[in-house]
Length: 410
Image 1 (cartoon, rainbow, N blue to C red):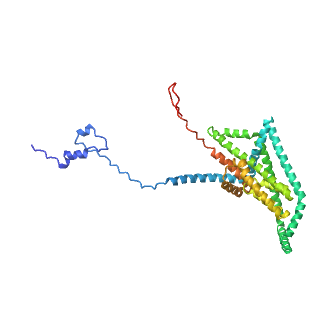
Image 2: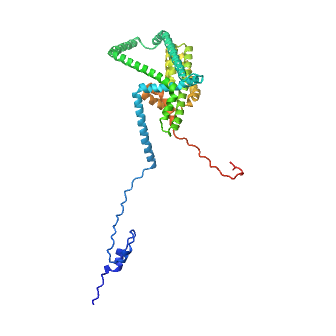
Image 3: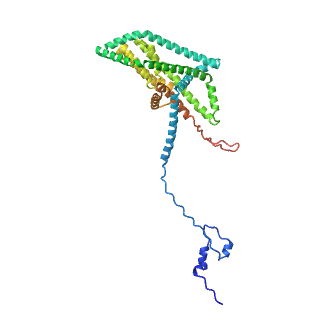
């Protein structure tokens, strides 16, 4: 009997065991695989090694914060721009609403006092509004009467002042010819000017009537209207709305009341000084100073400059210097006494912010924008700083002690 030839060396046990041994990452072979050495070796797929992604440049934390602030500021600026554009487009609605809010803030203490005396809501509102209309009508009538009575004397004094100026007759005649030529060249546009004047007058009358109507509505039903608006908000946002609205309304009310007191003080000082100096047009100049005081930083200066020019043209250089000195003292009294106690505690804005806000308001809305810029900016700022949830102090942990033991030392 022939002896079988031995298997080749590559088929021997040690090499086959290496080929058929389970991989460290694969599951162990079952007993059948271990018992059958002739079985075909298991083929395990070789997984490709994961390719490393190219490293990315890390974003610095400061740049990430700046980017987050940038897109938020851009979004906020876009919203503000759109709101201002809508307000400019609908100025016959936005301006009366703003004026009605200011007048309501000024008259609301009077309405509250009358209601405490026993008057109903409608009666208190009617008495307050009628009283305001009578006061305004009386002041306007007095100003017009004084202006009509003093215009002839002012005209004569101005002619005397012009003759005293170092201007030759040839210069005056040349100026007159230029004035006549401009009037003759513009005679064709008189009809357009009349139409523009009529349209402007109709817009002003519409704005005044709408302001008066909105003021009456706000004085009589303003609190109920606000309560209705708050009830439309989600339940979680109502306390925040109430918390933000109270300081905003307080600052708006404080600004308008304090400014009225300061404007009245300026007007009285200027009126008394002009009466002592025997300057004509005392009433119109006092009203100009009163209205100019509602524009911070520049309004009172412009009104005082106009009064100084009229004083210089009618009473001479000495009277103008006296008026300038009085205006400087009046300005110091306002800056160090009236503003800190009447307006400063409500309008907590830096003078730099006030100057920027007034300039922006004048560019966007003219005189009305300059008048409304400071109070509404202060109100919006007060609402924003009071809108977040207040941070309460953490409660102190309660110490458990045995009955009858002495309390711990503080």
